[in-house]
Each structure stands twice: as structure tokens, then as C-alpha cells.
Length: 168
Image 1 (cartoon, rainbow, N blue to C red):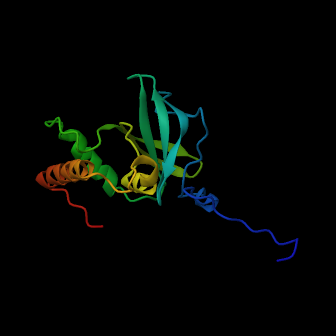
Image 2 (tube, rainbow, N blue to C red):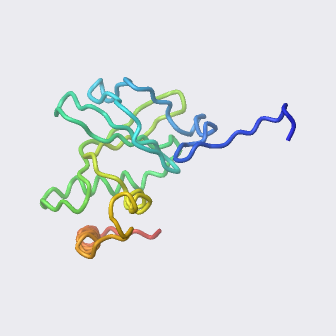
């Protein structure tokens, strides 16, 4: 490679800049406000194939929440499922994330569905990557693995009870 060749490497766990286009992702900056100023962006939590996720301060409820901003052209099935879960408030089950708010936000790339949930901890994938820093023998202790399995099975059971299944 000669000195005039530029090599661009996508930083890990970041979205592609080309996704910020009409129909794509919504550009967000620290300090931006959503839902009539209720939610103020504090920092980025992550991104996925069709959304970015932000830590936001909630001026109405106090404290923090997670704001997921879907691509403008994203499928609405997730929103439909979350609305159904939001309506089923008969359970104090903590095996499924609590949906705090759902709203649409218009921006330069279109109208984006937004999901506000309670803030959770790291994903299992992130924990797996850091096992050597957390546990001496780099494996989950049986009681931790059992607790995770129990929580997942309770969540799946609740979803199935509501007629919701995951086909992925």
C-alpha cells in the first residue's frame, strides 16, 4: 500500500455512517431532547442493525431511561409487540423489560419510532466477552447460569402466555 492509499476501518460496535440517510437512522447529539423535551440524551448505549440506543434523563419521572430510536424504514412489528406488553400491566414480572413510553419522532431522515424502557445491564454477549475479568476460571458459576436460565424461561413463558413468539 502506498502513502496515498487511505484505509478506513469501521470502529467496533458502531453503525455505518451511510445509514444516516433518508429512511435510515436519526442523527443524535448529546443534549438533544425528545418527546417535547422530556428526554435529554446523556450518552450512547449502543446500536444495532436498525436502531441506536441512548441513555436519557427523564425530566418527568426523574432518573434515567434507555431510548431506542428505530430507522425510519424499520418494520413496526417490534412496536406492535411492545404495545401489547405495555397493555399487559397485570404482572409484576421483572423478566421482561418495562416499556415506559412509545412515540414517533420526525427528523431529517423521516419519522422514527422511539421506544423508552428501563435501563438494563450489559448483554449476555458483553458479559461473555468479559468473563476472564469477572470470574477466575472464565466460566459462569452454576448458580449464575441457573439464575439467567430461570429469568429467560420466565420471560419466554410470559411472552407465550400473551400469544407472542420469536421466530428468529
